[in-house]
Image 1: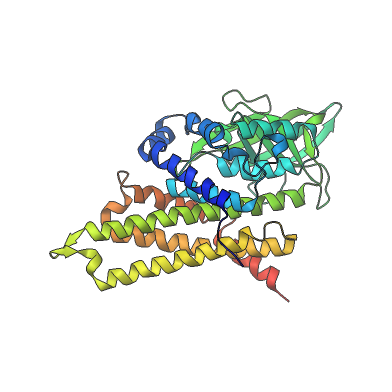
Image 2: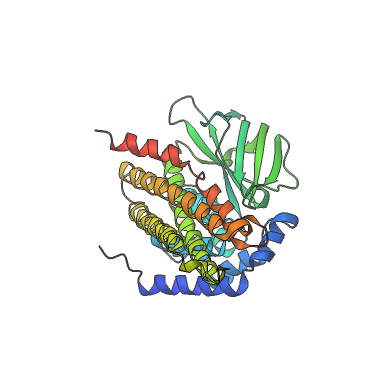
Length: 372
């Protein structure tokens, strides 16, 4: 099997890498995260206008370039390498996938807005009990939604929300609703509690207490299969993002060990530290192979897709933990300071172990899917 990128994919990777190297400053992005709006809207619009990557996996009919999982992998890895905090996975991968699979007139129009950089869409799907308890009841010409959503990443930045809710008690009775959203002025029946996560992202908990939506807000009924696919696509994308971050962490660690002097020589000359860096490299290479496995199976039937994604997520979780901890230790006390990039990468790698399912959850799912 050929794992090499084609010419177009190489150009996509190189162009995005050069853009981020010259335009995406880590200190500026952390300042925006901590004391600013939580992101850099000008960067987001540039990703759309100058590079066109926000529509990378969308069909040309909505302003996309007709790419697929490999293009998403290439983009996510470069974003991870630069530690980009803008909500690419939330809006383009997860929400974009759900919208593409929805047979609704509003979906195509919103995909066009995402591709041009004028819309941010977040999925409000996670709940405290781990299932879908939010209820949607029809009342005349409206839907009334009641329930709680937690850790809705990118919600404080969003222009639209996709909300999961039960429209029946059947196992497949989960529907998907689309609504415009202003986090600064939420509609009656919706409380927004925003916060900054430890990796400098923005998220919110939502309380739906009689939120009223028009009938045409129902984007898709029986949305369980589409939601499962979206979560697997999101998991594969953050796995690719983790690979980009780990490549940067390993590179910075090797460079630091070449420069840091102890006993009159670089600490990288000590064999025990060389062994530790080789172990980091081996974990990274296993992670890369696991991401390829997931990406190449994203369009397979659900059982095969889920098994490949869980294998990748479990492998990435182990590798992210190992590389992050080793990098911090090899940098010494400096590894956890705000001034050094390695500390920020460590936080992101820690969070990536839990996004779209923890390492243990994916191990359990893989075991279940491979059981005779």
